[in-house]
Image (cartoon, rainbow, N blue to C red; front, side, top):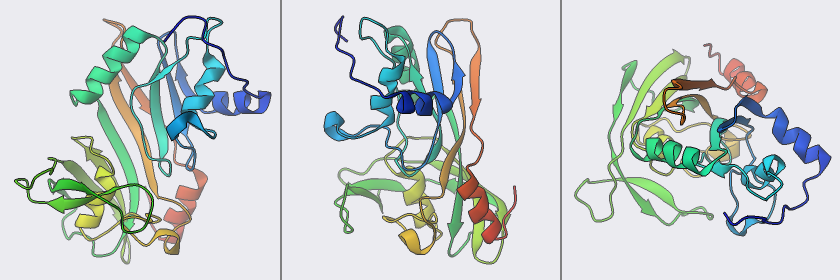
Length: 245
C-alpha cells in the first residue's frame, strides 16, 4: 500500500463496533468474531464491510490491516487479518498451502447420513446460480472441465428428528465448499438460500467458523488457536431443533 494513503472517516459507533468483535490482537495479527450478515468485502468498496472497518486500525500514514482469507457474509465466526505486509504473506501462504486448520459448525436438515462421521470428496464445478446473485458450486466428475477437487471431513455431534449439528473441517478451500458438500450429502445447511430452503428453514445461514488453528507469522511464536463462541441465534435454532453440543 502506498504511504500516506488518505484514511476515510469511520464513525465512533463503527469504531466501537469493530473493536467489539476482536477476539485476539497483537502487533502482527488481529482476529475477529464476525457476526452473520456483515460482508467481509464488498466489490467496489461500497457499503459497510469488515474490510472497510479495518480502517479503524490504520496507522497515521494510511497503512492498515490486510485480509488474508474470507468467509461468506451469512457465515459467523473467526476471521483473521494481518497488520503488516510480512504477516499477510506468511498467513496467506498457510491458507493457500492448506496449513491452516479450520473447524466449522453447521445445523443441517434432510436425509442425514447414517454414519456419524465421514469425508465428502465430491469435486465441485462453478456455474451460474439459478436463484440470482453470485455463482454457485455443483458436484461434478473430477475429470470434467473446470471441476475443482474438494474435500470436507465431517462429524455429526448431535442429531434429532431430521436435524443434525455437524462439525465440518474443510481440507481444501473452495467457494461455498461446506455448503455445497452438505447439500450433496442430502442435508443442506439451514437458511442456505442457494443450496437449501433459505428463510423457510432459518433466518440466516446456520454456519459458524468456530475455530482456526494457524501458525503465528512471527517465527518461533508458536500457533494461534482462535475460537469464536456460537451466536445467540445459532444456539436458539439448535434448541428449536432439539440439538445439543
